[in-house]
Every structure is written in C-alpha cells, then in structure tokens.
Length: 408
Image 1: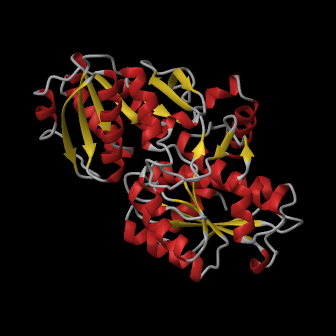
Image 2: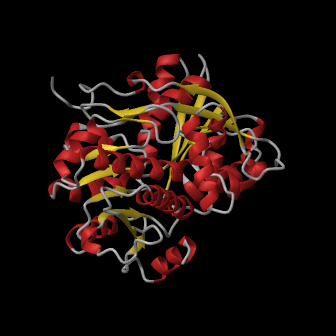
C-alpha cells in the first residue's frame, strides 16, 4: 500500500489507527522488537500539504535505516498521527503514542503551539522529542529538557537572515500576522532587526488562523503606506493572503516578504501569486549543485516518489528522523538517555551540509537560505525559486543562552 493510501486512511479514521512504515521484508518482525518513532503532524487543516510531505520524508529515512540493516537487525517503525493543528489534540496523540503504542521516540509538531504541547507531554515522561517546526519558545529554559531537541530553524534565526537582506535604513515595514505564537515570534524577530538597521515599523494587523477573507485587514495595512509588507503566516493562510493582497494592487507600492517561503505554498499558489515574493527557508532542492548530501537526498526521494523533488518542510522531517536513527546506531541502543547524549554531541550532514545541536538549548545550528519566487512558470514544475543568499551555519544567528534563560 502506498503512502497516499495510508494517509487517507489515517484522516478518515481520525488518526485512531497507527500508520506503520517498514522496509519490504521486515513486516513479519514482531512489533515489540521494532524501534518505534511517533510522528504527530497536522495531516488535516491548513498545514495538511506540508504535514503529508513530512510523513513521506520520514518514511524515507526509516526505509533507508531498515534497508541498511537497522540496529543489528532491529528495524524501525513509523507511527503517524493527525494532531489536527490543535494543541490539545497534539498532546492527546503524543500521550497515546507513548502510553498505548509504546513508542521509543517522537518527532513532529508543525506549529509553534502544538510542538510546545507535545514537548510538555514528552519531557514529563522522559521521552526524546525532536521538533520540526519553527518556534522560539521551545528553545527557552522554561521549556527545555535533556530530551527536547529542535531540528527546525527558529523565528529568530529566520528573521535575522531575511530581515538583514531586505531592510535598509528608513524602510517602512508593516506586518500581516497570524494571531498565534508563530506569527508573534516572527513579528518580534523582524522588529528587532528593523530597530538595529534603522528601518521603521509602521504597524501590524493580526488575523485568525485559517482565515479565508482578508478584505477587512488589507485596507488597514495599505493605509500604513509600507515599503515592505511582511506576511507572518504559513500554509494556506500565506497563499490566500498574498494572493488577495496582490489582487488589491498592493504589490505596486510594497515589496512582499514572508519569513518562510515554502515550496508547497508556492506550487499551490503559482507563479502569479508569488511573483517577486522574498522569504527564508532551510532547504531548496537546487542545493544539490554544490552539496553532495543534498544530491543524494534528492535522488533517494525522487526514486521513492515518482521523480518528485523533496519540499523544505518535508526535508526537515527526513533530517530529524535520519539524525535520530544515526544517534541510535552510534549509541548501539534505544536507551533514551544514551541516545539523547549521543544526539547532543552528533555532528551530522543529512541533507544540506554540516549541522549540530547547540549545548544549552539543543537547537540545530544550520544554514539559512534567502530565496525569491520565480516570476514565470518554468519548464520544470519544481524549479520555483532562486537562491538570493545563503547565511552560513553559525551560533551568531541564535539568541544567546543567557537570553533564553539558561544560567552559566
């Protein structure tokens, strides 16, 4: 059965039945012997496209581990749950994965809010968790634990790279912001960069998550007369709001910027909607021209997915699961404390160049790309961005450990 069929069954059954991804030939292996990895992500809702691609990429990492012999023959198994982009649902699914399904580890969370609720569950039960969505809060001392790792970029990193590329002294900046943690953190980061560079923040308009009509918000922003309009939202919110702002004619007077410019949103929205939009990302498949691990990753994903290129957020799930399995193999055990200690010291290059986890907050230190949407449809449907700038991996992009509340 292919992944699409499995995912559709999961949605239909409201994520009550686990999705098991194992390499061909390992199905007869007793489930009790498998290394179980839970993946709670929002398969339904405005982030569903990104979440389903994360499941595909996580499946690839598991298949590669199993095909290479696993941990001395012990195979891995992926259990996918739909957290419905709801913090309460995410906590319930995480608890179910731990107590009912007896998972060894959890990877997932595609929202600043859901990943925090998952983390609350996992750290109380001393289960290793790798988050794969942007959040500043999860890096702070209040939410830290020896078992909490953050593979994704965080809003501070993203806004540092994108803001410094876009802002100049005197630039007038306005925000259209999704009214929850992700949007708030992006606004905070951009505001800090604007202050440092002498740009002027002229205002912010907030909208609810999952909005379909932005006609009441956009006139208020237009009245601010910004040079740069930043869309601090994600998924379908991002695509719909950018299209409607373009239809309002706002591109004539303002540069459109979004902190995370995703492959899935660009493909769904098309070249016209995203023409000239600048944003940040942690991965784009064209890195394969200069980075061997990107080339190998792209080839493996294409072979398993009818020639497609992997998406940015999907790639993040691949890296999180693959690096976790690397740590398990290096530790030679599934013991949580030993794997966590190994992961904390791991130097890895899973798909985009060197990465490692900073000691204090266990945030993955990595490069940040600034990209721009191609203005016309290409002969290749995957050729949608051009890379404007690559900010190298550096702890200088992060808030200091002291700023995050860590002592010493």
